[in-house]
Image 1: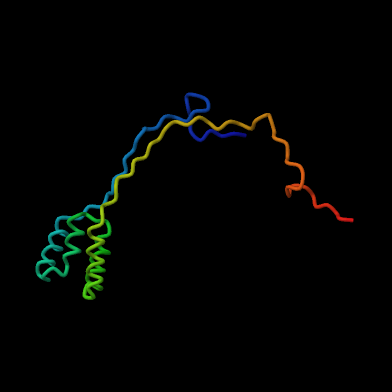
Image 2: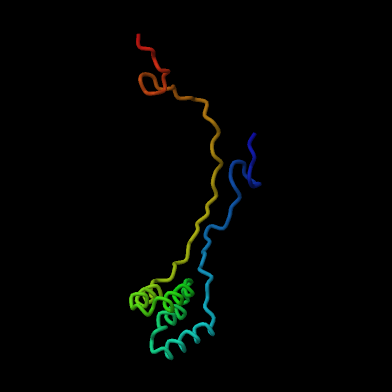
Length: 128
């Protein structure tokens, strides 16, 4: 028995959906977050600069940048790692393209013969 997942006006064709959908990243830093980051960067003489850059660029991993900067920034390597995380490019929007699809064809009436010979499909033969 075959069930149609969606009702359609044409038999064998799914209903038409919008042809393009753009999914944009939804993370936005608040203005207070950006101001606190820059004030902290100024008062710490640049120690919190990666966090301020990440907050200004609306990075979705801004919290991770701040934590790496605060806890590992004193090593120099941690500060540089946080700066690299802050300067990486923002994620690009995702474009989904939906097109109507015809239903899959049913089983064909013509069947293919099974392979013959020593292919592994045969029963094991006794060797006498």
